[in-house]
Length: 199
Image (cartoon, rainbow, N blue to C red; front, top):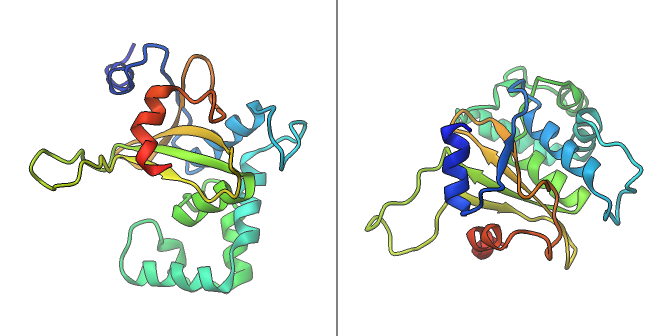
């Protein structure tokens, strides 16, 4: 067992936790989501017989991209934010959508993650290791900013998945007791406690 997995088990107080490592190829977020959705038999919006792939998820994000979002991408790129270099060519909307559909090209950003959450009605819980744990005395808030919940769903009882985001901005999938997708009733208590203030 790697030291990273052991540290995660201690973080969540759960020896059943393990990591499903995915390729760091630019599609890691979509790969994680596809694996979860394809294991789910409780989907209301998307039939359990549907096959979700990196491509279908990228197509969804591209289709949901509007001219307003294009402008936000431009603002982010002009501000020098990392990961928006694909806007350097100042693409028109059809070209931007085509770029977003290409595998291993444009990494999933917050817009993509929120779009997937909304369209597929799934709460995406992310342990963001790039965010440092707040040290005692730094703030009066007890919030641990490493635990992020992306919930753009409209359901009272959505599904959940848990991802690890490494310091290299790479996503891996977290498995608890052989499960990778959860309902509110099956989400482990220790995971709920970590993200409770976010959900």
